[in-house]
Length: 132
Image (cartoon, rainbow, N blue to C red):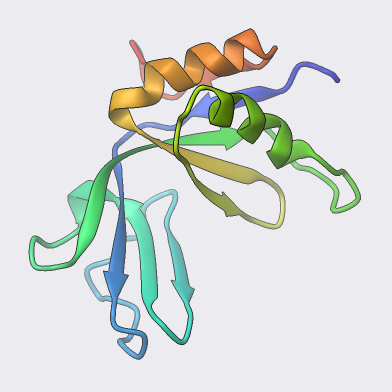
């Protein structure tokens, strides 16, 4: 496997749970990364924690890792390769995929553990912000 690079994106993220038929919230800013997913059970919003009003049910403290893509749909095992060392290190994740790439979110308090596990597995890191 070629060395895969992950980019640590700046900022802290939160995952929000809203009622399933609620419209996409007006408070959702147009930050560089956010994700809206609707199911019959809920409307989930993943965004910068600073955007989330206090009255919204949410879990904050997530850091965002971007796998450096793009990846063709025929490439297999990209996400599994990242998840295996994290699972072995007992790091819980949220995963989001886009057309071009995959994103992994880990809790801030286990970011160093996640980074160490991925470095040991042969991954490389870049960061958007200094000192992370």
